[in-house]
Length: 267
Image 1 (tube, one colour):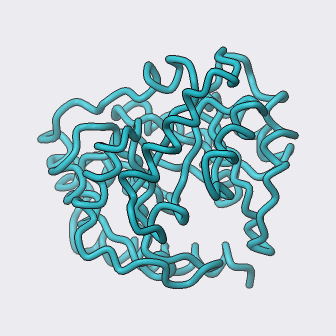
Image 2 (image 1 turned 90 degrees about the horizontal axis):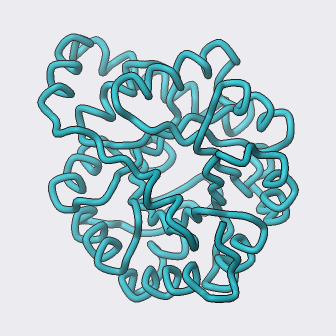
């Protein structure tokens, strides 16, 4: 069993428990009580490179990275540092996250929030909206094409902006066929868990001109933001560097400054 298959098996077990405990109609009712979702696209398309800062406790590749007793406080540091959006990892078995983290962050900050999880059902999209998310991650490798198309459409219909994640050319073609408008390229191989920062540069020229291009993983500092920007990134998602550092607000500010560097070509 691959790492992805193992994660998905656990996600489906946990999802079944939540579906049994809270009917979909109740989740939809909770979602209807949320304010209108924030649209991240104007900021992502405003020029320069935007930073999505991530709240993440652990990962299969790194193990435990940070305890994060107060995810809302961390998210507040990110927002004060200039993050355009905040990603909250909600998968619990391998990443130590929860929907409670997402709710806590929503109560504290006013920037767009991304629910980052292994979404396989529209129930999870409604959960995301009910917890205050404005965006939701959809991983092409975790979904067949019919499911991908359906989830992209459902996300948009309930006000979420889908961030569709790919790892290679074939997955990118599937994302484009699903009408994805925000496409993330994850530099981490889901099989080997190794980082290849060159993947984004290879895939970016194949993306539609109208798409928002997001570079994910592998950011060690401002120089990587600049490199991704020169390869065509509009947005860079950063996680491990932030949660493992001592001053997340300052680190985010440095990354944001790199994204606005005059040497970067703004499109």
